[in-house]
Length: 143
Image (cartoon, rainbow, N blue to C red; front, top):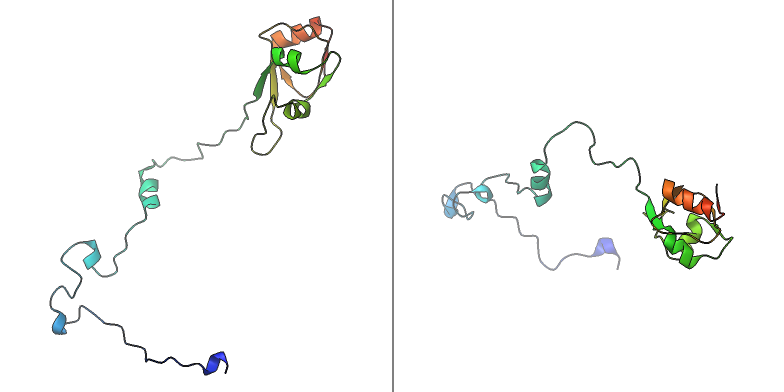
């Protein structure tokens, strides 16, 4: 036996065509009044209602062009790094001082809110003016 040889046990029942006179009467089993009693009724999804409430404006307004850097204070560098060690965003990520942003290595900015006593070599990081002064004062360098 194959698929094309299969036959159903019962015959197909014709679908009931309502609203065309006959025994069903005026409402034809659709209840009375309202959207669902009309022909071709469509109930709009909730998402469409939400979209219609948003004001129409030209252009795209929600794109952030510049990524905000993750900030690290030099006090944390003092605690986690040895003197003469190189500091890069990759090393900061490995030590747990920063987290990945959208699956990528984030932009890092160093802030100088506290004092620094270790000589550190900083690469590929944005640095505030006060942090730059304190790193260079401690004998470190910035690339």
